[in-house]
Length: 324
Image 1 (cartoon, rainbow, N blue to C red):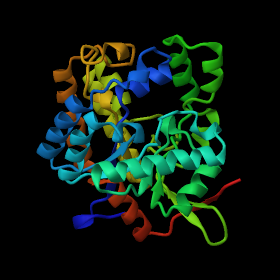
Image 2: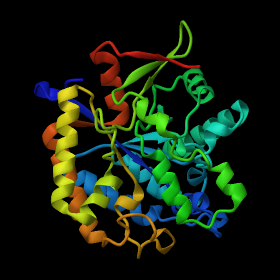
Image 3: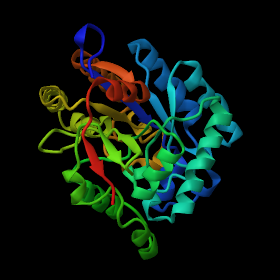
């Protein structure tokens, strides 16, 4: 996965989860009105990326792509030279529990909505809340997707779910619906590096996991790093450099993930103030984000996730894993 001048490549992606989708998963009322912060968020994010000369894959929720108020900011993403990906239609992290026909409808509806809104057909998919299933993978392969990016190989998923539940007002039925949110301990046994799902003798699909620390499987996506930054910026920087060096030494590659709340504060979205690092000001967050992206650029040649997927497929023989 080498880039220019022999530099190792890495992928950059942004899950464009909107205000209403967080409220829905959290069990808050009012999400049905689909409140949005995309018109404020996207220009700020694009400005930062442009100044750092970075391009990313934005995973868009289909429900947002059919609303008139979101069309201009979504078009801005493509006009700025970024990729688009499919993040499902209704952003329900229990997607993997749905019947195959329902999963296909989620994918197709989102795909069509994103194409109409942006003029681009998504080539990659990431499940909401890192949800995935064998049925999902087979549907993506049948629809000629280049890659899936839904797996998150970490052991701490159950801790994230416990924190989410303790901070929510979910009913028992809603908790049951979300009982596999963020996956179980077994997710930590999955590979960190890209690999091929072997779906049949003739069919495979590239999987690009959200990268975690090799061996330890602790996360280092941007939200986690900002949480550490709220404790100690030195701890944040040291941990990130350690993670990147470990990935480079293991030749694991890196798929680095960003979220909207990495750019917002509790004042911007009071309903989401319970999330880690939301007490941090927007200005302070931006400063830390810039610093982290600059560190990332020291170690890797950063590509949008789709371009990174292409390089993975061309660069070396990928390991394969079967699907049950």
